[in-house]
Amino acid sequence: MSPRLDAPRTPDAPSAAVPLGHPVDQAAGRPADPTTGPRAGTVTAQVTVPTATPSGGPSVAPLAGPPAGAATDPVTGLPVGAIDDRPLDRIGPVDARALSKQLFARLAELEEGTHDHAYVRNTLVELNLALVKFAASRFSTRSEPMEDIVQVGTIGLIKAIDRFELTRGVEFPTFAMPTIIGEIKRFFRDTSWSVHVPRRLQELRLDLARAGDALAQRLDRSPTVAELAEELGITPEEVVEGMAASNAYTASSLDAQPDEEEGGAEATLADRIGYEDHGLTGIEYIASLKPMIASLPVRERRILSLRFVSGMTQSEIGTELGISQMHVSRLLSRTLARLRRGLTLEE
Image (cartoon, rainbow, N blue to C red; front, side, top):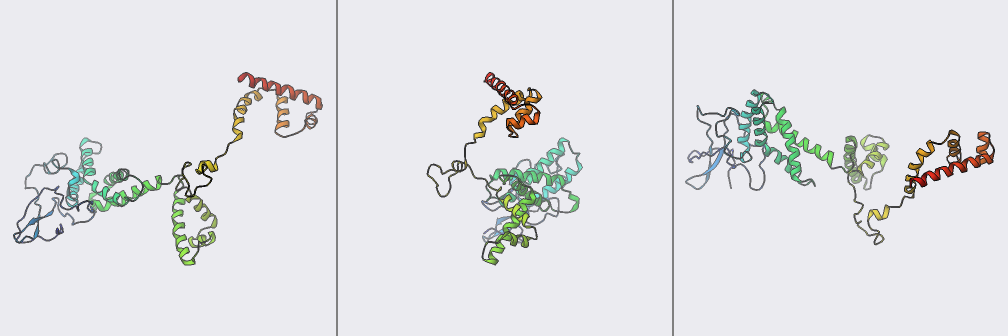
């Protein structure tokens, strides 16, 4: 069994220095927790790795810092070759903390918008991607692809890097993890609902679910709307609104087969709820008649409105307009014939 990385060094054991990027602090098959481990108190990382002892037991040795007077990179401020010749994602969390401190100190000195500032910022993003992968692993049971979750978490990491201030004395992983996890949760809140509803109703749905489970255990039956309202301290109307909003979380396909087949061939949801709308056939005629009716004289338009909208008889229309019923009949027949000719010409 390998010793802890922060275990005390065995006095009689030979030491072995390894590069900063030696992946000795990661368990096989699972990402290491970047938020744990000993704190780096100095600019140079202090990493311990197991080495063999004459007795066969493992021992650990610290990694020495760069020699005095060593050349440094003019952009990052790190010793030359500290990170250039190794993949950044292979650097352990302890070393990543120490290097991040140096890079944040250098980032504060650079002017935003310059090439050097962007290079150091991008290096910080790549150096701390392990934080994103660790946070994303908490949501591995969700239906969203892990690549999408990591991308969203990376956005949170970039926001944390832009807001982090080294002078406050807070470790960067401690500062960044809430931002990364919050960004991932916001992603699920905004995309996991089939129909987007206000955040208030999303939170009310969760409160109703918790209160419903608690009341069901206490009462040994399903709670009523009034009992849920009393439990949460809200009105029954708000409870009903929250229940209706819960239906928007998931959507069923019109072609999905139900659990219990109903009616053989008419088993899909579309077959059971679909119907033919006979009003669709008249939409084209209505669209064609609108400009024709608008071109009619005022009296003819009023006769059409009284006859087909108000449902008045020809005698009632004659009394309304002060003309005979026969005159109304002639005007109405002439107007309808004109409209029919217009529709025939269009066809």
